[in-house]
Image (cartoon, rainbow, N blue to C red; front, side, top):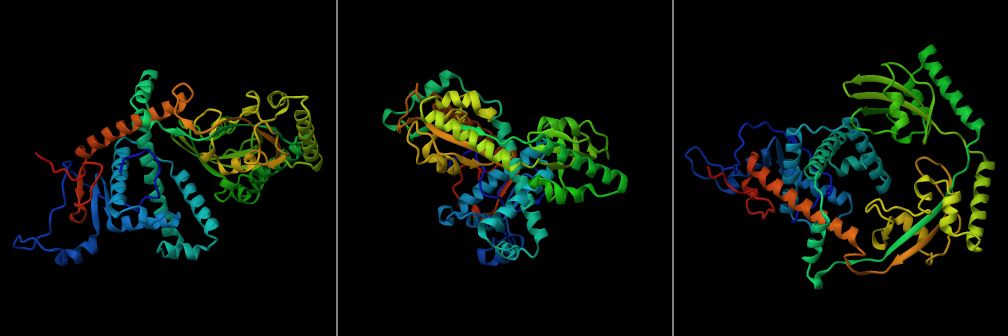
Length: 477
């Protein structure tokens, strides 16, 4: 299988395995006391006991890890018939190689962030499958929730090590215009890629205005929370669980771990958190998300353990009605020809990210204005699928992580039908393909070098696998 830089399914549970030799090695055949090689039936019992498929650096891969890979594929609704056991084993070998060298290169992961990911994954699985925790434990053959969470923690932790190592390998790669041209010219004319239909989409957003009274009300409430904690010994954590509007952190009592070298939260939040002393609670402050108070629990070098309570001011019915009336009037002016969509967006839209571009949405994958129809976000596609070019949608009610309610109108401002790649018209796409090819070659070179430099043992049971990497090469020294 050709290696690509992407996140695969959750990898298997691993165990730390200390080794002190760094020559590559194949696991030798089992022998009896006389030195005679035992056949597979004689060694079966021992294989079932240790179940070691391979060792890569400080990691061991068990036979059961490959079984768990199949299980994860099934849990995601992927047909396991698409993957051979050797292919999944090969991916595990690669993952452990990256994880091993990530640790050697002192790459670390935020464990609180990983545990948060685990909680989100479990909740998502339960939601999608409509099942209970008992059914989930049965599916994963686990006796209790703790063992499931710990296994998923290790899976996610090592998965993040893999991804961070891959990013580090290609971090400084750039392609020149000449490399892009050479890449394009090397493609045979009859093999040029076909790019699917692309749309440009614009929107105008009106957000209901929060009253000053509502803002003052949440500030008073936050001040009361702070006073209750300081003066009466109330629990900040409990208040976060019961009252905070930050749903993601609410179950953890509003807990976040911030790192001064890795910006995570919005600037207003970081500035306040990093100015506090241990045990201190901030005054209420505002961000795009609402109003906060922050408790600094612990400083550990560059890391700050903080808890926060977020309150979002209530919207009045009058404000919601006014916002909807305003966008309806804007729509009427565009439809009547009194205003262009572009001009209306620049003058009236409350969405700062798009208004200066005439409401044009930016594709987060390509960082341009084009959205390939077949790869468009399903929610976005559902909103524009019935629009003709230049037509203005009816008023839509929406929400995002900052705004509980917002109103918008949308329009398809341009359409490019499917076509063979054209260097001038599709330069950015061809540049992306060139970058991907260069990343692939760099990753492949790194992998080949590290396989030779890393302690590797492959079990007899997997010697017949056809690997992309040179995993079975014996040390010639």
